[in-house]
Length: 274
Image (cartoon, rainbow, N blue to C red; front, side):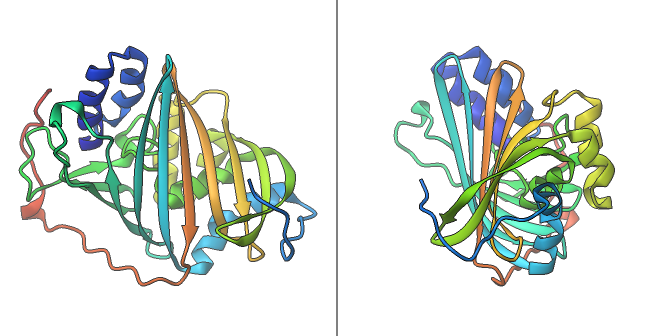
């Protein structure tokens, strides 16, 4: 929601209608070879099990990048934060591109709390008071919150791999100086929705029902010797634009404290149209 409104200002200055279509979903909001990461005999199974490996790992830090490109225009949104895979909760601070209308004034990052089937956003603008949060049920979104917030929920990204098919092993490489196996394939949303854990099945089924990213989602997944995702890149097709979402996971075992806002701090008023 807030991400999309702020991005809406950006696209009006760029004048690119196709990027506007992509960002409209947000209105609701070269490695070198290395050892220690031998290829699996069953790459598809290893990729599909990536979400379970994260749950076993417990927690991690995360940084995200979402690039939207259409008609020669590219917009990038970046974020960073932490995630607890067992509690299905995380926190990300999402930084929007500088809007020319702001004349050099920096806006605070959009704070996002990810809690299973809910997305909470603060500093989202569009008439929402600075001290209030906006809550969105991810199952109500046409993409299941794969791109809506400007950053893909790390566990939802991994759950999407449960629909992995056409998986091939690419090579050994390194991510953040960690030896990893690079796999490439296509994720089928319907298969992922059927196999996803209860908290995310509804959101992915909503994306299927509303025709999000038809034809599958190409991905590149980088797994370490424990099967944990270190890097994951999805390529979504949104309207007439391509959206590439990249997530890096590191610092496994990091402390994670996520406090969901009380009801009195959740904004219930009208969101301004800008």
